[in-house]
Length: 204
Image (cartoon, helix red, strand yellow):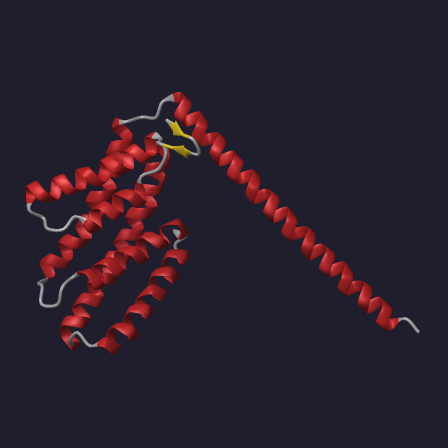
């Protein structure tokens, strides 16, 4: 559905529905604030089921890494106390570990989700809460991811929606290829200019 330059597509509707389901689920199960689950659902929801499952796998792995390190941060903070400098020094270190470890196991597409989960758990658990609370916040990320994948399973896009999504992806790919080609041309021109300068410098 188009409104001039604005388009309301299936993915947009599914994203809004995923957030609504997270809010409803958490309200009726008394799990607390649905923020982490809702964010996880938005991050995981893609244009079709296959993409969501593929992305969901990397996100779940990223959630495991980030959630584990978030719990490590929580335990260390409980041991040393909620000091400002502790957050400044330890949290960036855990971010580095998340990135390096994810890259090492070739889960690069899950790095953002891993860091998001780490930060949501590390900074989203109020001081004084018990370990069960922290575990539940990690589980919230899996709930959101599951809702996103289930929605894509239940609401398959229409053929025209799939075609439009493919066309948009191809258009974006062509745009990136044009940008890459322009960068290569500039690099080649710069290289030729430098070589010309060197040749002039060596001429008697």
